[in-house]
Length: 159
Picture 1 (cartoon, rainbow, N blue to C red):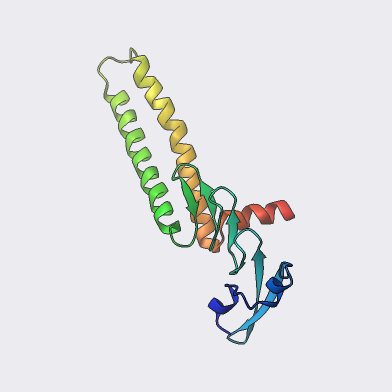
Picture 2: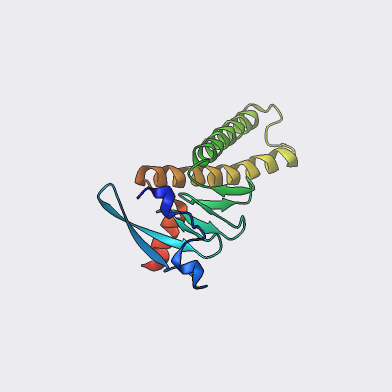
């Protein structure tokens, strides 16, 4: 049986003709390995392993990581590398801006009479630097473990 055959439902399915939903989990043998597929009652499909349903986007996402409000969509198998490159480049930009803020303050001829806006910019950039670099570090850690944010949060909550 092909993976595509088990993920779709046809009018001839026994569970549809009786008007009741299929079992929550179904075991399939693919390449001599047993694969457990969960049924999504919203999408009416058997989800592939590591897929999850996003309640905000209202569809199942393969290798679901999280729903990102900053990017405006789900981060999963098809767009995780672009999300990772986005936060990596944002980290580099924040480090660049913070470095040149500090250089400007150090080379400033006015001494300690810096403007309020310069000090505010250094403070905002300092806290942004830690949060963005921390997020990039966390996702680097997840990539090294071959894990998603959803799986990491689920394992912390279940234990």
